[in-house]
Every structure is written in structure tokens, then in C-alpha cells.
Length: 379
Image 1 (cartoon, helix red, strand yellow):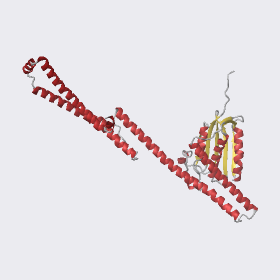
Image 2 (tube, rainbow, N blue to C red):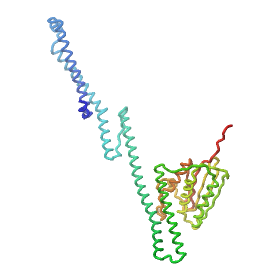
Image 3 (cartoon, rainbow, N blue to C red):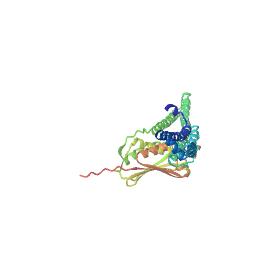
Image 4 (cartoon, rainbow, N blue to C red):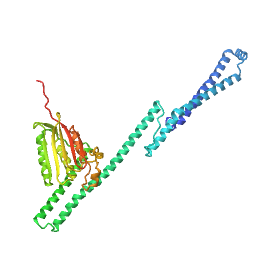
């Protein structure tokens, strides 16, 4: 019986409950009248008949009373059924229609939350679920679109150096590089293009680590002046070969220290400078690195005299996959994840980063990292 009732609809159960509310009281009332008459007849015999006759309690009286009770109960049940339909059946039907729309993928179908109490809370929960599903679906679609764009960008970035490497290798094989000077030029070009490929692969590997929250950090205490001097010397050779002027200004105390991962912080400097070099459009390229004292922190500024960033793009350049209009229209390529990696590393160091720019003139990246301070112990 219990298993059969599980398959009965809620509407049918409510009708059965209403019917039971009518029939059970009626049966009990009729049974009570019959038992009362039998009791009086059994106890009083013929005297009971006289009493009924004297009081004019007839069958017609019992019938009229019974019918009145029936009508009152049917009217009550009718009113109760209407209230049940309004309070429960209609909201459940509306919720059922809404859930069908969700199942069919229509996440725009809204429920008008006009009910209160438990039903109103149920409608409110549906709306919250719908909005979260919609947000999640839109985010998935956006991520899929960005992933496709990333693949397209990476394909372009990979194809360019591979094509160059293939071309120069074929030139060597065909004997085009027939002088030591040409051979040296071809080999250097192949080496530089190979480094580009390596950088791109490392960037993608690091990006995968960001998505899985598996960035390998090795934090340690290090001297600011020494670290940035090493960085400047490292990138300086590459910039010098590209005829780009590099200036370095350290305005913090020589003893200043920070807690950081030197490898990942080098990645930050490399990505920012690499981005600057990519979009330098002046005949004489110039990059400045400044280390400023911010009392409890240091502020690093890396400024270039490149093409700058439009105001509408400036607030989005640290987003994953974001590429400004100028970069889309350029032949420089770029996966659009370099600055998002920079932002992630700086934030994981407890710092923050932002950019300022004047379109057509300059761009400056600023990031702040707290200083290391010895904890004074009471003796």
C-alpha cells in the first residue's frame, strides 16, 4: 500500500484527503445516531418509543439533521479545497513549469516570488539556483571562448618562430649561408627563436599551474638592492642587443629586505619588461626601473616610452586572455596571459599591482611588496 501511494500525484492525495474529511465525519455521525437510538431502545424499551413520539423526534428530523451536516461539511471541504489549490497546488504547478524550463536549458524563465512562508522561500531558492546556474553557464561559455582564443593566439605565436627556424635551417641546408657572417646570423636567429618558443611553453606551463593552484613557491628573505641589481644586469644584456636604453634607480636603503620567491619575482620583471619591449614604437626605446621607499613596503616602477594603453583598456590588462585593441591589430601576437601571471604572483606575495599610462607616450607598471622586519623580542 505504501509503495502504491508513492506513485500517486499530490493533487490526487489532496482530493483523497478532502474526501476522507467528508466521509469519515459523516459515517461517524450516522453511526452515532444509530447507536444512540439502539441504546435508548435497549435501555428504555417501549418507553423510549413514547419519549420519541412525545418529543416528535422522527426519522424526518434525523434525516434533515444529517443532510444539514452533509451540506455544511461539503461546503467546508469545497472552501478548504480552494484554499489548498491556491496555497499549494498552484505554486507547485508553477514551480514544475519553471523546473521543466531549467531542464530544457531556458535559464531566463523567472518565477514571480509573490508567496510568503515556506512556499515563498521555495520560490526564492529556485530563483537563487537559476541565477547561479545562469552565472555558471555564462562563465563556462566565456571560459570556452577565451580558451579558443588562447589556442588561436598560441597557435599564431608558435607558428611564427617555428616558421623562422624552419626557414633558416633550410637556408643552412641549401647552402644559402655561404659565409661565416651569414652562418653566424642564421644560428643566432635560430637561437633567439628557440628561446621565444621556450618562453612561451614556460608561460603556458605556469598558466596551467595557476588554474590548479599549484604554483611552486620558494619564499625566502632577500636583499632588495642585490636582487634588483642582478635582474637589471640579466635583462640589460638582452635590451642592449635590441638597442633599448635601460636605466635603474634604487631609492631604498641598502639593508632593505623582503620575503619573496626570487625565481617567481624574476618572472614578474621579465614578463613586464617583455611586454614593454613588444610594444615599444619609438626610434629610441627606453625602459626605467625605479625602487621607491613606502615606509613599510617597497614600490617598484617599470616605465617605458612605448605606445601606451588606451584608458578603456587600462582597467582590464591584468585579466586573463585580455588583449588591447592595439595588440590585436599588431603582428606582435601574445597569448594575453603574461600580465595575469604577474598579478597572480604579486598577490601571492601579499602585494598589489596597477598600471598608469598616457596613450602614445608611456606606460608604467607599479607593484608594492611589504618589507621584512625583524620581530623584536622582550628579554
